[in-house]
Length: 359
Ligand SMILES: [Zn+2]
Image (cartoon, rainbow, N blue to C red; front, side, top):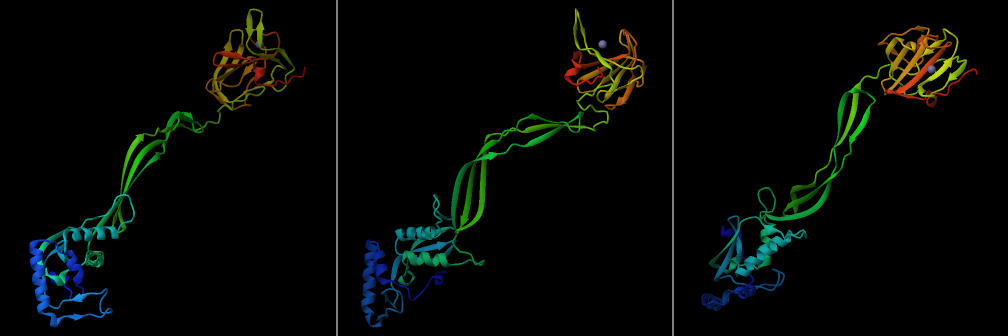
């Protein structure tokens, strides 16, 4: 393989001399060399300056010196004169591909060198041999010698929280509640970019979670919204009210839990809001009564009716006629006793409705 780097025109005689180690073996070799040069002086010629770079003297006769042969992946590339030149060759090759990162490039090809007595014509300067090795291509046209450099960077990254939705089949479709708040997490990310001969070939990433994100949770209803669903706003249940004969409030030791709306017997009583009839019948004192559950926490009572039009279980829409005004139960004249309750607690209907009466 030595013919790979064998050249006849690049022997720098003066450089070769500089590279010699002062050992007895080298001194002996040098003396031998000088003897050969002296004895073959008639065969020497001085090259013109434009024949080759620099001022050099080419020896046509072989001079053998102990040199250091550098091989890359088993392929001999050339020889330099000292071990320190071997190191310099490797350093020059690596630094040729230096991209300036904190970590220095390193040669990943297997580079070896061995001392061998050989022709001076195989001798290179460190920079010449480094240049030769760098310019060599493999069968794919890529640099023969492989130089790797890694660039490692670290940073803290945000881990965005996720949102999930839970479904509740007891809630209507338009129900949406944020059950828990999402919180972003964080991670410490180390990225290692690997370059081969100056080109990016691989990126390795390692992530360590510092703080896990907290998932945001929503709850959504799945039930179809029924036509009898309460609107949440009440209307006056009788249009033609002659007079508000008794308001909500204490009457001595007892509470009047609703409002009395006097009107003509047979006047239509409407559902004050939509809902489900949960009672339609006689109640002591209340007479004929309708109770509607609005399924939003509110219940309305319509008492002293003359006639009941709806039945228990019926679904009614706000404004539907549910009964006719009367004078049943403890009543001294035709009127509607109307109550709004939240759960069991009676509330003042005038806080929900501006009642209109003739008087
Ligand atoms: Zn009353």
